[in-house]
Image (tube, rainbow, N blue to C red; front, top):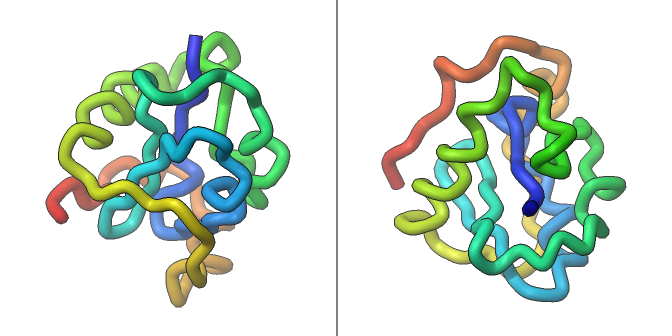
Length: 109
């Protein structure tokens, strides 16, 4: 099992989780973060740090977000590694309140 970044991260990119990761498994896209499952050691320290509760243990991922398992795997292969905290996206607080954001995920870097 691994951890998965889900839909709530879209448009936010709070990176509190990245700074705590002991194995550097986060990758950054234009408006979303993903976890590389091949690197994640399933320690879980990132889960509590996400202010929008976007990170799940794979077994706890809501059924409606199961596609994010594959998305994290696929996008981690092409998106650059992120190893430290950055400022969130400019409108992160507004995006944090939104739901059903999948259509806004930008996959191209």
